[in-house]
Image (cartoon, rainbow, N blue to C red):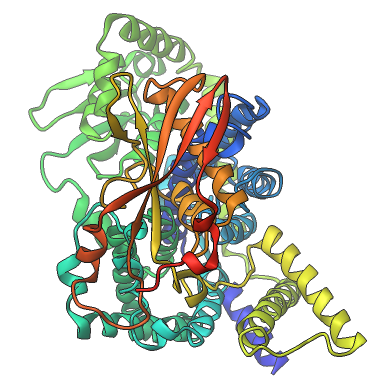
Length: 634
C-alpha cells in the first residue's frame, strides 16, 4: 500500500502541466485576502477595540493591517511570491492568535484560508501570470521567452483540492449525518429561512419548492462525502466543478456569509481542465484590428519592453515583429534607426512616449493609466524616463555582449529544462511529501474521529486514566492543528446552533429630535445591512445572540455595537440612548411552507434600553429574558 501511494506521488511530481490554473488560483485567492483586509480595516475599531473609539486597541493594529494588505497585493501580482506567501501565512496565524478574530469574530473561513495559505508557501504559484515569471523572462532572449512555457507538477493542483477542500468536505459531511434537519434534507433550506442569515436578495420563492430544497440538501451531503475520493480523476473533474460552483454561488447569493462562499469558490479554479485556459484566453482575445509592435532585437531596452508588453497583453491585442536589419547595413545607420514603434490598424506610426500611451489604451484594462499619462505633468515624467532609457539603447559593444550573455543564459536554461530528471531526487521528494500528507491525514482523523464520531455518539472517553490522557492529547493536538494548519472540526450549521433559536435582537437609537431610528446594523426585517456581513454577522448571530441569552456575552457586544455606530450616526457616547428590540421567529427542524416570509414579517418588542453617559454604558434588560423558561418555542 505504501509503495502504491509513493508511486502515485512520484507520478504526480513527474507529470508536468501548464501552471496557468495555479496562477489564476493565486490571483483569486489574493483578491479574497485583500477584500477581507479591507473589511477588517473598516471594522477595526469594532473588532479590535475593547470599547470602540473609547478603549482603543494598540495603534500597531493599523500598521499590521496595512502591512498585510501590501503583502497580499504582492502575493496577488506574484512578486517574490514565496516570501509573501510566508508573510501572509504568518499574518493569518498572528491575527487569529493575538486578536479577537478567532473567538468573537470568526469569519467561518479562517481555517480554510490558513490551510491554503500554508500550502501556498510550497506551491509553484509564482511560475505563471506573475511578476516573478516576467523577471525570469527578462533574463533570456526574446526568442527564448516566446517559446518557453512554465509548467508545474500536477500534484500542485491535487494537494490544495485534497487538503483544503476534500478533507474539509468529508469532515463536514460526517457531522451532518448527526443533524436532524440535515437528515431531513433541509440543510440548505433552514439557514435561508432565518432573518439573521438571509442576504439582501429575496429567494423566498425558491425556498417554497420543497422537493428542490431536499434535493439540494441531500446532494450536498453526497457531494461532500465523495469529493476527496473523486477530484483526482479526469472524468469527474467537470461534474465536480459544476456542482461545486453552483453550491458556492448559491451560498454567496442566498446567505450573508459571502467571504466564506468566495473563499471556497476560488479553489475551484484548480479543477478547471487545463485545456480550457487556452480556449478562455482565445475567447477574450482581440480577433481583429490588432496592433503591430516593432522592436529591435539588438536593443536590450527595446526587446525587454516588448517582453513586458506581451506579458501583460491579456487580450492578445499586439503582434510582435522584430525589426530586420540589412546584412551590410552600416552600424551608424542602425544606431539612428527606430528601435521601438507601433503601427495601428490605420497605419499610423507611433514612437517614444506616445507609443507607450497608445499601448496602454490598446490593452483596454490599462486605459485609465494611459489617460493619466496624457496629463502634462505625467506626460513630462514619462518622456524623461523614456529619454533616459533612449540614451542607453545602443552602445554597440555593451549591447552585443549583453545579447550574447543572455543567449548563453537562455541556452543553459533550455538545457536544464530538457535535462532528464534525477530519479533519486524525485524519490526523496515523494518520500517527504508522503510523510507530510500522512501527518495531515492523521491530524484530520484526530478531529474527525473524536468530534465527528465519539463526541456525536456521546461516548465517555474519561472512564480510565489512559482514555483521559488520550482525550487530553487529542484536544491539545486539535487546538494546535486548528491554529497553525486550519485542520479542525467542521461542524457548521448544526442542530445545536439552530435548535430553539426562536428570538432575535436588533438595536435602535433616539436621535436629537427624539425620533426612534434603526441602527444601520439589523433592519426591521431582521436582516443584516451591508456591510455588516461576514465576521460582524458571525459575532452577533453566533456569539452575542443565542437560543438562550447569556448576559455577559450580550452586554459585551451590545456595548461594542452601539459604541461603534454611535459616532457614525452623529450620536455621542457622552449622552445617548439606544433601545433593544426583540422579535420572535420560528426555526423548526421540519418543513414549513413560506417560513422565510413569516420570519421576516414578525413584530418587534422593546425589551430593554442602553444609556451612554460620559463614555460609560448602562444597560437594562429584565432578568426574565435570560431565563431558560422564557425561551419561545414555535
